[in-house]
Length: 194
Image (tube, rainbow, N blue to C red):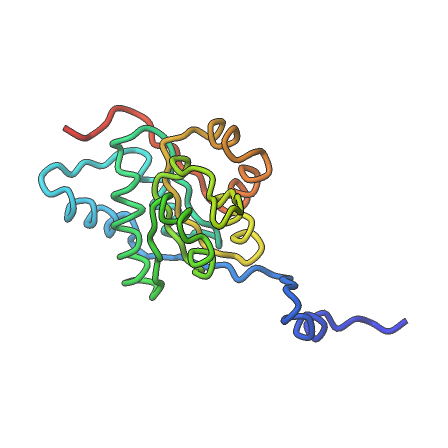
């Protein structure tokens, strides 16, 4: 029996939709705590405050192991500030990566365009309704999560929903994929908004 040359066979199948190894995105920033703190101070000025959950974000910035980031929990704790404003700047400056930023409604409105991107930030997951375009119903976030797992897309996500609420909205399959492709960080405590 002839031994298979996996790489040659993978190359031959590349135009068939076959994905053998996801093209994951590596993030590694030296002095991640200092640069995240600098970003927080820049955007919040005199209201800057370091919260315990930010240490988990620092660990992700130091070495993401090819995984995205899911920040969930209470509102007013800095999820959108960090994920939607600071991380895109840090990933661009320190890693040369471009983060494509959307909110959940934008994802729903143009899912196919969002799925074309490789590094994607979505704010407020769980606030979107079922996507209906030309009578076709789609569960946009479930599709995006599936695509991210298959192709190694980096997802940076924020939501005020708990993991159980995400499971109720999107199902066990989507939440299981999220756990595999993202680091989850719980933001809990009182709101910092005044």
